[in-house]
Image (cartoon, rainbow, N blue to C red; front, side, top):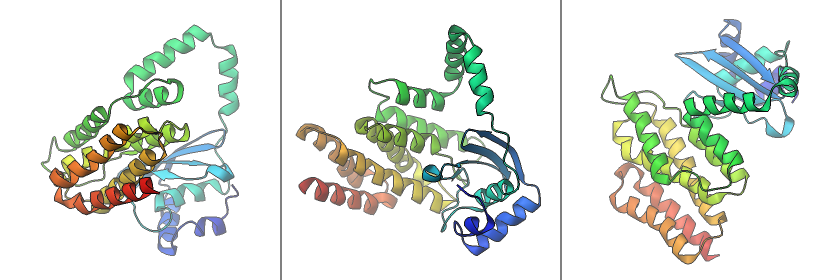
Length: 269
């Protein structure tokens, strides 16, 4: 990807570009790192936000942990892109290659094992990439989502900021990319159910939760449609939507009805 001010302007609104430019000029972009085409950085806003993007033309798709839900990219992504115009971070990919060539395999496995044991999200991604067996159940993912809500209400009875659900969306996409639609559907079902169960706790960043819920629900329908399901399997996936319409949060009822209608129409085709 060629990074110029003109290209960056095409990715966002004028107002967002101006805010991102201010963030960059004020030195709010920190900890830039690069491995091959992947750039990561931290941007100082109302809190610290993590930005990830790829310089590969076909895989740019930047992500940010902020709750922005407007048109185009957010100001944090813009600030990071502006910081890349004059100078890219040193590529640490070759350094990694050198280490990989010299490291003992057993030592590498021991290191990876210890790091995975300390990071649930990374462990899930590891299994999604290298383990052909079934992943966690949708109930387990739902409980993981509920735990995030619990963590955000320990000091205050409601959630006023945007919880970062990217560990679930990234994992679901990883399964989808590998054609493992049942596992991906379990991730999205757990995400959607977890948000639905806890939505009454939300008292801020409403657009963020609405977007994550809507996109997760759409991805669930997409995965169920793409999977090669038996009739009984399909009915179980459909019943999830039916039961949520009947007993889930009133806030999401129309969304569940829309998803059910979309799923049934697609299957009938």
